Length: 51
Image (cartoon, rainbow, N blue to C red; front, top):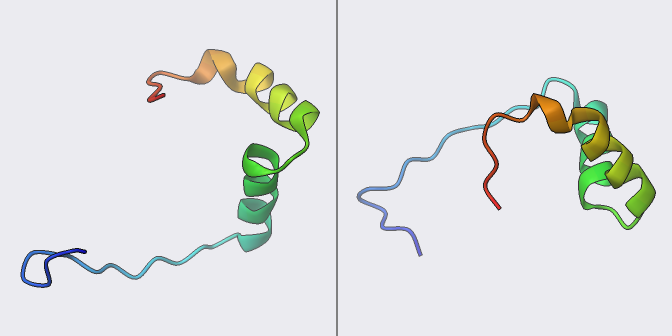
């Protein structure tokens, strides 16, 4: 658990919830072809990758 004396709680708001949901579905969903297409389309834009 997080130590209450040192943790920081920050309220997060999502300006475009529909777009966020769409991206989560592509990246975390079960449709492999959509995920692969997204990765191939954006692969050259990645500067850092934490695998």
